[in-house]
Image (cartoon, rainbow, N blue to C red; front, side, top):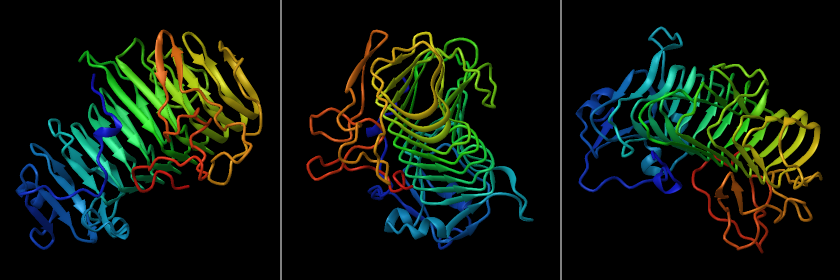
Length: 403
């Protein structure tokens, strides 16, 4: 299995490797690409504040490309260190700002930049950690083309198509990011056929999806079964224009609300969906457990059948709770979730300790990822109670909990 777990990612503030060189731009090298070309595996290309318009490429080496946020922890360095796409006449597009070649490994990190106005901000065919960056006004902000990515602590905002686009045999951990106000989907995953035989793991966890013009997460199905597992857990979805999580069939990229025969397992655990037209537009093998759906104007759960399974979930103020769903609804909670302004359950909320820690999903035991180690039952929704009696675990990343 091509598997990426929470332990696989590293925090953005990482020490420089012992014995590695630091190549500074523009002090040592006039351009980023000349510094990248001069670097060897283990080196760091450290970029001073400024605006840089280059088409960058990392190939045949594993390096860290970073702004001074990497060494100082100063969040202001992210906005002050801009990698700008487009041609010198200011036109948008013209290819990726940064491309990662096949063969590059997860030892490569891109840390602490603002990517603007590229056809793609970052496009990877290799493996890369993308940590604590801001992406704005690109077409697709981050594109995985049969590549792997650990994506943590970033902001994807106001991009012209998708925040994150995954094609081919791609796999990723997408964790603790803010993905908002993108013109199309927050994250678009195409389940293209592939022939490697490896199981690809996609984990989408702890993110905030707000105000995207399509789905929060869109799963685009193609005929046949592929070796993928998809885990969508502890995310907040608010005011996305179509559905929070939506499947489409036969390669259709526009959400048509017809559902999909998607048979790859999709685990939908402890998410909070608020103020959306649709909650989940489904497939044939989806597991729904410990989720909260509140103020859903049209349908909370649509087209969920086949081997799909539902445990305890809360649905409140939905135009229609379930439509064309073959689900056991006996454990559904139909009460006001009573969430505070930060979407955490208030005292007396029916979400408190009402969830299940495990569930049987077609013969496999699935466990949720706890946010605390109190030994009590999990809450419903994406966030745990943080009262003094129930302390929460520390969260990685710097921006994934922003609203």
